[in-house]
Length: 213
Image (cartoon, rainbow, N blue to C red):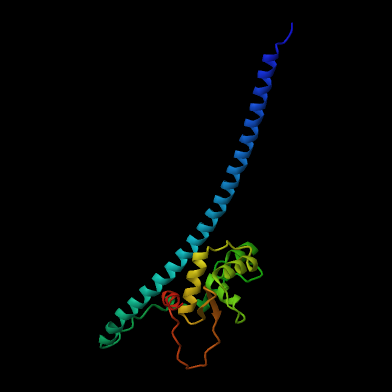
């Protein structure tokens, strides 16, 4: 039984089409895998930023609440005429903490007994790590600081550029850093330690610096 040339040609065309479709499918899978990997990395970065920002917000909120409580307690304390009378307690209940022998629950763990995993979980605040990079007077941009943080602390989640910029601006507000424009880009430089009692010179805001440039 002979095979017609037309049928052979049609099979070759189908085989070529199937091969091209397979190659396109493989390339599409590789592209999607790359996008998933990139999105996963972005998600990890955003989760780390969220945790750090939540901690900063809780710290600032707690400081404001403590200041309000202190301001409200001041007038009340000054309006009291006499201190409250002491209430005598039975002698059996007057034991102090010194009378109680230390136990495993009350004795603090020494550094030698603390697990390395627990010590590694305690991370320094981002502002301290950023300030530690400014050991000399070379100006740095946000991208420079972000890259140096990743190189110096590879075990930490790399912070986003916006989070690094916010941290740098907070250090400028506290007169730890100064801000300037160099070749059209905003750069930050460490300020020398001010003498004791010297007035702190305010640093212009980001909007004023850009307007002046």
